[in-house]
Length: 306
Ligand SMILES: Nc1ncnc2c1ncn2[C@@H]1O[C@H](COP(=O)(O)OP(=O)(O)OP(=O)(O)O)[C@@H](O)[C@H]1O
Ligand SMILES: [Mg+2]
Image 1 (cartoon, rainbow, N blue to C red):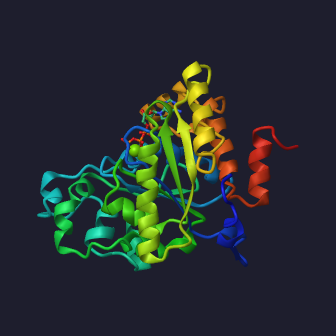
Image 2: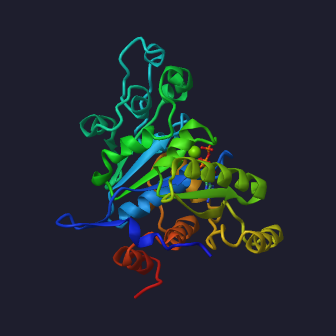
């Protein structure tokens, strides 16, 4: 069973602003590629925006897939990547390298509205992919992102962080900035050893820096074909061996996801008839981070409440 005792501790009741959630940070992490981290960030962000929440998506991946999907990717000239000319776009690069962190007025320069109402983005682009060498001279602490987000937390209800397939310096920053962490895994590539590696890194950071509030909510299978015998055998095995870590919800394979991502259009406007979208609704409910009105609205939308 997933421990949900934290649920109400995180909610800050904002008198006058009508919002119950303040800057709840959720990191989507797995060092394996192609497990649906970006897809999960996109769909959870859309669902939270549908529930009238203000959402910030943070792109912590030099591949910039979530920035592309949300139409916030800006190409850079090679000269600006090498730092010789002014960049075309200020973004997550500035947060880490130019030490914009912690200053609200400057942070607002790197956050952009998107084509989806309620969703903003702190994007990345090619410059971020080249950041490692630039960081050699900087302080390499795990709290750069956490400090930066603290300055703007009150402007958002939820902050979703899309991570690169790595367990590196940036992932550690993501972990340290988080309230909650979720880990998507591909049904066919799931290894308990891989999951243990991720949990060890999370626990090391928590212990080393006294981050008791950071909570691993669980892992969920993605791109699943539930009709196959191999799936039935595997799910049975996982349910037996890691019951505390596995969400009951799994995300079914759905071609509408690929269509949505290849056309860079939001899922909720693209297709309400998507199995995967329905599964993400169930996942969000199972994460148990919503207060009653939003929980009810979502259940009602999927026909689970009157
Ligand atoms: N439920 C699904 N059904 C079908 N295709 C899916 C589903 N979820 C994700 N995909 C597809 O799988 C591919 C990988 O997904 P995604 O880019 O979200 O993974 P990722 O973990 O972010 O990858 P990376 O580690 O490279 O950042 C994409 O082409 C995406 O469209
Ligand atoms: Mg990705």
